[in-house]
Image (cartoon, rainbow, N blue to C red; front, side):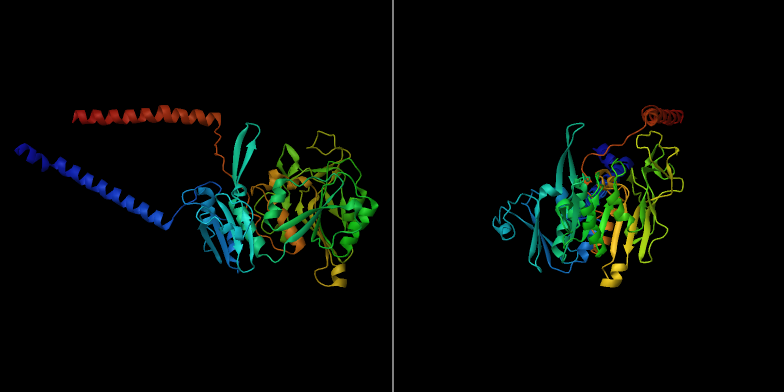
Length: 478
C-alpha cells in the first residue's frame, strides 16, 4: 500500500500527469478553435489556381452594382454542391448583393415567379429587383462535364464565377455590344471558348452573310471578319467599305495559310494605310520556341487595348505580316499593337520546311502582327464618336481555344479589350476562365525520381539508424 502511495508521488508520475494535462489543454483549445472557425465560416483557398476565390474583375463588377440584387441559391439543406456553394456565398455582401438559400422542396412554387424552366438542385436565380429582371444560372453550366477522348475519362470544370458574374453584368447593363461576324468565305468557326467569353461579357454575336447583303446591319457595333479562306466579291467589298467610311468599327483576322488571292479583303486594309506581306512570318528571336519560329510571341506595344496584358505572352501562330504605308493621309493614325523583332522575315514558300533561315524570296521584316487603325475624317465631319476604327491581327488562330480558354496567355485579354475598345462599351468579365477540377499531377524527371528514392528509402533511414546506434552506445557506456 505504501509502495502504491509512493508511486503516485514519484517524479515519473508527476511528469506523466503534467504531460497528460498539457495534452488535454491542447485538445480543448483545438476543439474551441475549430468551433470558432466553423462559426465564422473562415476558409482558405489552397487550390493552385484559386478555384474558389472570386477574381478582382468579379469583385469590381459586384461592388459597382447600384441596383438591388438577390441571388437565390436553390438547394435543400444537406444537398449543397460544395464547389458551387463556396463561390455563390462570396457574392453575399458585395455591393448591393444578397445571397439567399431557398429550398425548392419547401417552396416548390417560388421559382415560378421568375422562370418556367425546371429547377435543379444548386441552380441560382439572379434577380435585379430594381430593374425587374432575372436570370437563371443552371448548375450544369457552373460545373461542366466533358470527355477526355485520349483516355475516355470524364473531365470536370468549374465555371460558377464566370456564369454568375456574366448574369450579374447582363442584368445591370443598360445595353450590350452587338457583334456581327461574316460568313460565306470559309471563315474560321468561332470556337466554344471564344463564344463563351463573349457571352459572359454581354456581347451579342450574330452571323452576317455578306454575299446577299446590300449593307451592314444598322445595329452593328463591331463587324468581325474571322480569317476567311476565300476573297470577298467586289460588291461585298463595297458594302463593308461603305460601312467603314461611315464610322464603322471592325475587327479583322487574316489567314496566312490560304493559297487564294485575297485582293478585295486586303484592299479594305490598304484603304487605311496597311500593306500585307505575302506568306507568313517567321521570327526565331521572337517565337515561343526557337524550333517553331512561326509560333510568335511578339512584343506588346503601349495602347489602351494592351494596357493590362503586358505581363503575359500573346501568342500569334502562323501570322501574316503587316506594315504601315509611308504616305498615309493626315487624318489616319495606324498604331502597332504587336511587333516582331528586327530579324523577322515572311516565308513566301508555304511548302518550305526551312522556317528558321531566310531564303531567297522571303521578305525582310520587321512586321506588325497586330494593328489599331483610326481615321478621324468621319469624326471631323459627323461629330465625336464617328471615327472609323479597325483592329487587325495577322492570325485567326490567336483566338483558338488553346490560347483563350485560360489566363495562361494574354490572348483572352487582348481579344476582349479589342472588342471593348471598338464598341466603346467596357467589359469586365474577361479574366474569369473555367477552372479544371481534374486532379493535378506533378511530372518528375527520371533523375529526380532516382535521387529522391535513394534519399528517402536508403540515406535517411541509414542516418536515423546510425544516430540511434550512437545514442544507444553512449548510454550503455554511461
